[in-house]
Image (cartoon, helix red, strand yellow):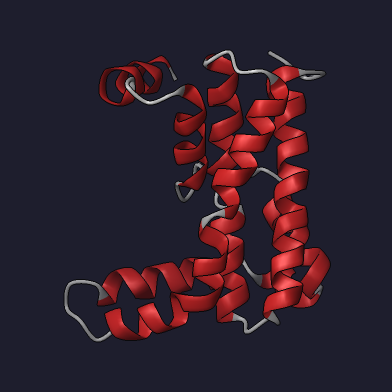
Length: 162
């Protein structure tokens, strides 16, 4: 973790810590599961850690839900991106079994329980590929992000602090 903090300070140290948390939380796979611990390392108060991590995690979700299928359709036939698209689709669909069984609650828990390979990005991708209603998917993802923020806040700032 220290290597990441050193890299961030060396390359992005000109940005305010809040912006670093937003950017970190926007990244796929890292999301707010990395944003909240980063906020703790940067010594932001808990309310800022939650606010800026959730904000960063939410920003890409509407774009994924609305446009990812069209983007994938455009990328799939290309030699450069076709394999990447197939891998992303296979990965999202392989993790979507629980989502298919109990759409809303499955998606909420998939996004909300901070495990490797889960989160808002993958949840939005799976919801889009499974053609889940956008309103239902948006609410489930938002509530999942709130659950993940609660869990990560407890781990980073509170009860389970290491």
